[in-house]
Amino acid sequence: MKNIMVSGNIFAAVSAAILCVASGHQVFAQGHEADVMPSDSTGELCAPRYGVTVFSVNYLREKPDFAAELGNQALMGTPVEILDESGYWRKVRTPEPYVAWCVDMGVKEMSPEEMSEYIAAEKIVCTADYSVVWNIPGDVLRPARGSKERQKICDIVAGDLLPYSGRTEKGCYEVRLLTGETGYIRRGDAAIFSDWAAERSPEADNIIETATDYLGVPYLWGGTSIKGVDCSGLTRMAWFMNGILLPRNASQQARAGKPVPVEADTVTYPVDSLDGFVSSPDFRDEMLRRISSLQKGDLIFFGSPAVYGADSTVLGRERITHVGIYLGEGRFIHSSRVVRINSLIPGTPDFYDLSGRMIKARRIIGSGPDDGVIPITSSPAYFPWH
Image 1 (cartoon, rainbow, N blue to C red):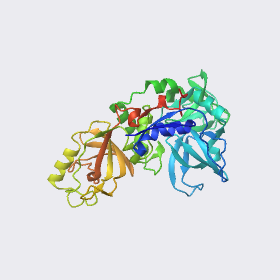
Image 2: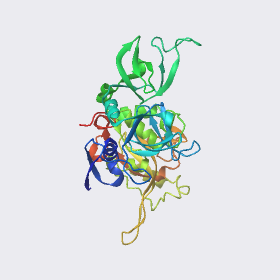
Image 3: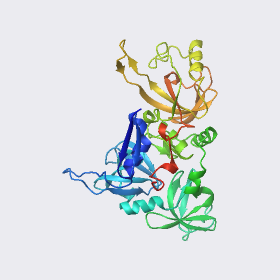
Image 4: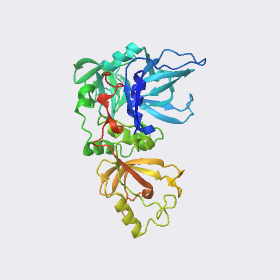
């Protein structure tokens, strides 16, 4: 693996650190100055523009149009770089990195100095699946219906970040929304972000517990939140809520962590023609062999293997199309039409009929930055750069 040194602004550093495995190189980011800047239509360098997402879940689309494909979601409090604008749309780059469009109301623009202050400031992280920011503290679990005093400011979901005022009142954290409002979050639904991040323990049982919180959540292409997840959105959130940043897409996650041998026999059992042998006893033995090295919490990947010619030339590249989290005993959790648990072993009641396409596995647990597995506490998008 080749080492590459990158210097640039905060998002160059984040992009290099988190996505180093996507290119098959190890990338080391250094610096915090804004010496890598976007250019305008004339090619002239522009001052960098930054912002922070303000909706509970920002919907990022591939084009500046509500009818465009959903590409990703960014949780509240996520720093972004603003690359372009079109009407009321803003083209942003998130820390994964991912480039897409969101509406202007969904991002609070900041100067580089304001962005640095925001990253350094203490925050509150939402730890409940769903919660609410209220305009006044108190018994926020059951506010009086139709109350003119207590009103909802906005909803929040797991992983959302809000600036913390340093005050608690009547069982609530007081937060300063980026819209300028002061709000209150029930303490049982949130935590102080720096403490929470330092206490995360990305062990198998914790990862699995987080993933199972999403059971029944509908599949949403581009989704990375409790409001809807795709397959890699589920795996990314399972690790994010346990203090680890993974790349966004399944094909990128398939390069993170350490390899786990699967050795799928796709010659005898080609992945594009499963129907003829899924009920065969030999295929059951094949799947038991494939999973023999897996451990709880491993990422398992589905797709098509690389195809090589007689002289070892590549005739077809590996294609990863799906990812899940291994639970042990042949079962895994994944987002496929809905977040659900299935078995990889033929003949079981919850057998996943595309199990024969499981061709790869990676061990994230126990891996580190050299393997493309970044702790939140080490990310300059979430904590001051050191």
